[in-house]
Length: 169
Length: 150
Length: 283
Image 1: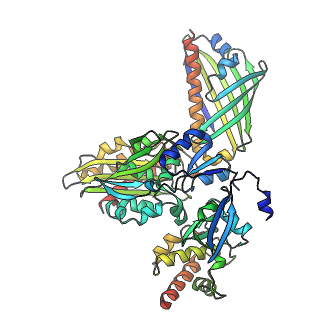
Image 2: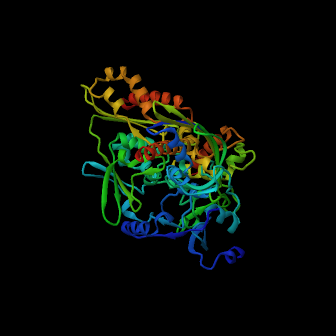
Image 3: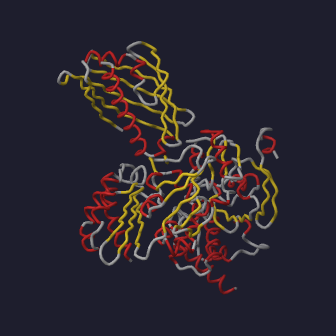
């Protein structure tokens, strides 16, 4: 509300209607607003992190129409008519997604800062390729950086989740 | 970053020396330099340097101070400026030498260029190339101007 | 935070071109934004208007057309990576697109945007030169075609006019004996050296050899002097000339010493990549 009032009267406002974690959102944004800021500050979903701010580290990864994007370098209006998924929208009715369970079970995170982006990227990978080889996984996840784990547990977590998801379907 | 340039000019040393102190004509030889003004003749000058690399443009209001001067042979000067829009600073230490060379004048200079701030994000290599180009063009322009006038 | 700007969303290429003419330096074409938005976030550039061109559907196709593969400038790296047409007819381009930056950049970034921003440490331009690509540019007045070599002028500088849009990249459909490869090297976020090789190998000798180097210098360049050392030779003879060709290509790369490596180092890597790309093209 305060933000809307702070906007100059001549500001160009773009109506932004999109699905966020399964629910319809209808807001207005100015062209220069970044998706990461809108999601974190306006919509209160702080799972996505601002880390490198140059779309290299993946900590700001969100899924737009199922595909990973760097929210730090995406203009908010670009998600009009799209379906956006944040880490907060992954669990359904309090039940963790297999990726989330796997990361917990297999120790796929330490400080947790890269984790929301990591898990969302992994979801995009598995949606595209339910049975990735380790090479496939590494190639897809190449743009998500972790400073804590050394990646081994992350790979194990994703592979375990993949197997879990394949056996369920 | 350090650059060294030398040009041989078909003009006597005296004329080259006088040309250097003729601020308007001299500044006109520096690519991207405009609005040259004398603040204190022989000591302090001002100009605006505008340089472009692709879409990246900088505008440095620049102050040039003459630090040392040896008639007809040597000038030591320092130019500095800041572009607050882009958050960058520029400093150039210039050592200019004139000497006789077979009846012509060899004009040489050593320029130490420092670019600080955001512009450095463009990459040392790009800035170095640009600075080199500018200094090259400058040396050639001075030579051309002096030789045309004779 | 970005500084405020106005968003324009023209409905045709002509309209986009007119906006560029009208607003000049204060407006910029905006597609994926993967380079532009970074520069804007850094505060290195500012535009009062961004001209979104992503809704121009005519710039988005991949098709085989009259002996050439026509790629719309708005195709994302991901679209090129997953295109069956590209995979089958231009495998070297498929591999290159698959390895651009990271999955998120590939999702948003367009081939056209990559080429037009002309960032020195970029991949596609180098290979497009080796593939004999033609760039097609449009403005309100009409159309211009020129080679990939003519397209790149300097770091961050192309030969596009201020009111032109790059609309299409056309690559001749390779014949049965065509071989090509692109290899890059780097350990920073962007590649430090890139080498592309292409030639026809028809039992007898090599013909139509093309060699291009990129990333090491301010813009990609084709190295005819290196090509001449391999052209017309048998594979074995050409292999014996690879070291020299590598040296020539390295010198021609205009390598600059910077954080990516010293000039010497980059020139050396050019030679290494040329050798590997040459062999790789045969497999």
